[in-house]
Image 1 (cartoon, rainbow, N blue to C red):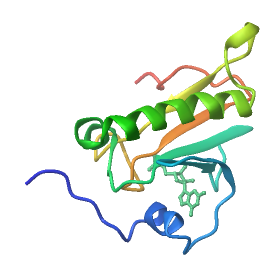
Image 2 (cartoon, helix red, strand yellow):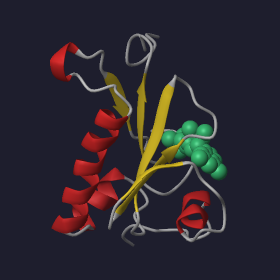
Image 3 (cartoon, rainbow, N blue to C red):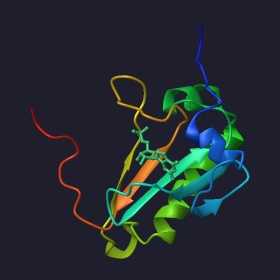
Image 4 (cartoon, rainbow, N blue to C red):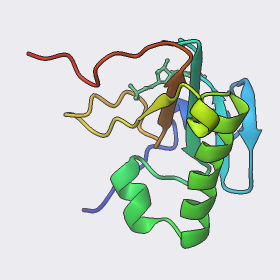
Length: 126
Ligand code: 5GP
């Protein structure tokens, strides 16, 4: 069966320019833009331009160039939004939700970069 990709998802529409976005950084293979419902002072979504549904899809099937570009873009976004840990900076959280158990809402890989406030524990304890 393999990985499925629905090209009608909202981020595919953003990539085709059918829906506007607040771009933070665009590279050859990657787009970073502001989340429409920010959950922290910094809330940026980093997505590959290619049709990958989730992190496992991307890391198994994307090209080396796409994977390199995606990871470098995450680093640049951290620098640009001033959440990096360099020089004693306050840091951030990177989250990617995948599939049903991950509670993924938009089926195009996105890494959330969240920062600008204390984010607490990773997951609430049951
Ligand atoms: P998920 O639950 O799939 O990890 O997160 C989806 C994220 O996409 C949510 O944080 C939501 O606010 C964001 N989002 C949904 N629709 C749009 C949109 O049209 N534009 C932007 N910029 N973000 C969106």
